[in-house]
Amino acid sequence: MVRGGGFNGAIMTSVNGREYSRKARPVVGVCIDGSDQAYLTAAAEGMPNLQAICQRGHHGLVHTVIPSFTNPNNIAIVTGTTPDVNGIPGNFYYDAEADEEVMMNDPKYLLAPTILEAFSLSGRSVAAVTTKDKLRRFLARGLRGICFSVERACETTVGEHGIEGVRDLIGREHPGIYDPEASVYCLEAGVRLLQHYPIDLMYLSTTDYVQHKYAPGSPEANRFYARLDFFLGQLDAQDVILGVTADHGMNAKVKPDGTPRVEFIETRLKAEGVADARVILPITDPYVVHHGALGSYATVYASADHVTCAEEILKAVPGVEMVLTREEAVSRFSLPGERIGELVVLSDRNTVLGRTPEWHDLSAVESGLRSHGGLHESVVPMVLNRPLKPEYAKRLTSGRARNFDLFDFLCNGTKD
Image (tube, rainbow, N blue to C red; front, side, top):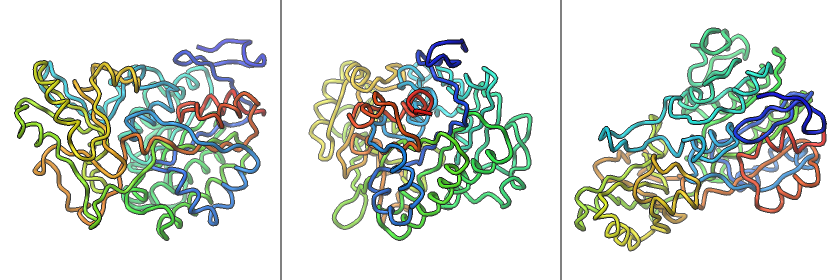
């Protein structure tokens, strides 16, 4: 819905109970996947553009949604809402009625409109670029504008993606999804779109292959962030209102010998008498090379007479930090109750949760694993290239702001 008046007399767009001011300059939101503050701090020397942005604008730490996974947080950012409203608490859930484990990669699972959709329907020019195509499908729902993924940049058509000839626009072939340059290409695409199209609102979302593989301060990570910084600088130079945040952080999940620290909770539950236990790992998606479908968040389905027993068993598992009933998880983390199990399990900073040893292929992570999903990956940076109004500056430094406040800060909180 678009209406006159409201915020400083500007035209407002209302989405999911929030109102967003339509700015005279292009608004650009960037999600750097898997990027906690440690990466930015360690790479600071090679990120002069980001340092300049921080000095000129604002920089703070914000909280993600739980689970601290990619899709729930990207969807939260582009809807401005929590998973109980937008419907996306992960990549998988168990449909008990159909007795089927369902991958939520179809936009039909999205229960709320996106800010991108609403702005495009109000007549604004909107563009979104993702690195993986799984996220692109969600962002494209209802969007009348440009929306494509790096993964399938060579396949774009005007009818489906609002654009063709992406290779010619950017001047090079798109990298593979497990190439660090795939995320760089995403930001570069944003730069080129701004140079060639009259964009009013843009969202760019990278992938976390580098963060899964390399720790903050490693030469590989620092080189990657220097590459991102170059294009962040080019975005900033185009007189845009720019905001950068992340969907989640990242931590090493290993034993002292460097091998993955995994607790196979479905195996444990069944061994201790909960025969009908079914564990769903919502991190699971088609791209498991870098994480082996192992994260620090899981949901457990069990019959009503086994739930209390399962809860007690799981609370005694080493590395398990929190076990919540469905009702507790819905209340604490604003999750959609119909898409989580009877129990929600979170592990500690150094542990991941698995189903059974046979269910996972750990060959790609046997020499080390970095992953996310729990509370210890739920604080990320937010950087804005413009000064904030006092009430927004206070929010950013108070610890109360969320990553899904990004477009609120960009549209309503900046001074110009």
